[in-house]
Length: 520
Ligand code: BGP
Image (cartoon, rainbow, N blue to C red; front, side, top):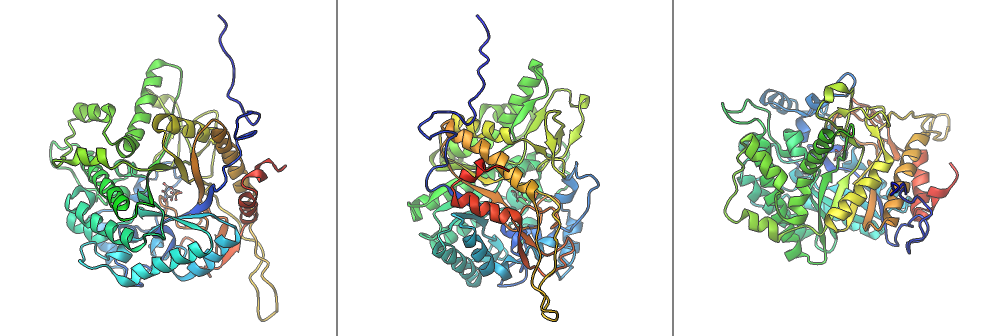
């Protein structure tokens, strides 16, 4: 019998969704950012210091190994606390969304956006995390913002915790390694869900919850310290992650009780691992790496830890302390949808030394000879997004939501600002065809996945505005379709300039994706 060589259909599929899987009506086209990277105003409105406010801007050669950029030690934190201003700490000024939010929302409305995925800064609501009463000024800021968004027909999709917890909980409680932090988070979640019921209909609990194992400080507020003798250095990460799973389940329960009309999703940095060869050893390694990424969603969508991670704990001697009732709580409070970030794919092998390495989101990987890379070395793999969508849909059969995807690039600002003295008009512009091409190639694959039968709620492109990079703390690693006139040192007018991609994205939304067929 001959081998079946049928390839997956592309663009010609006669499925009921119509040729090439048109985007559904009501598709949530939007953009996405995070409070710690965009807001600034770190010392305004009663906000407390967060874990992100103490990460300085550092450089890292070729950005293949970025781990040093995201770490904090007792010494670096003390130094940061002693530095009163924003200079040297880019996330303290962000893109000054705190000062420009009305103008930015008007720009989003001009683009015709249907959704804005954003996060609430826990430190604007509970500055140290342990207060009995919330900070009213902080609550009001988001209330006004959500109200304005809704007035403009833009759905707020809100992350409760996006790499931004009160520094006090990090330095005094040990971040998420402390069980007490679960209680503080529960109070925070109850406060914001109660206050914004009816305004926020899509909640996400923890951003890229798998970061806690990869970058424990960024994901879980775990300061890097020498582990006690005989204790596996990964122990703290797994314990912190378990507490986050419990807190996520409690937050899910709170939303379902306080606002049954709202939905809750989890958020994973989905990193699909391809085997480097057809050597069965590489195949099994890739399967293991994928399952070690997906166990995070197994817990939040299926309600239980997978056999793969339980075996890993046994083999590695990792002890995760669980309180009585934790597993029942996880099982009873699973999410309504699964959201994820997709930037690139990775490669697995039992003999990685045979291959070169390249950079990536949160960690580096084996270089895939079939793929180009971005300026920061991330694999450029649009088809990988179709693969991920089908894989997640087949595994979980819950609605999916792409809440991050986009290209970090060094854009060039041309032209000059308006000059009152000479009467010169504002001629500033940014030509970013590479970003438009990135969106076109990824969204065509998203459309294929919809034709394959995947249920997808929406797509929010990362950045929207240029914001401070999570991993490198650079402003100049730009993702936005709106240019922000500021540099890595926080110098600039913070003026907003529409890039070419702004106008393209406006067409994308207006045509519900049909612009993807426009000749480039
Ligand atoms: C994801 C984070 C975002 C964002 C993005 C881009 O991991 O959820 O916060 O920053 O990656 O990465 P970076 O900013 O490091 O280029």
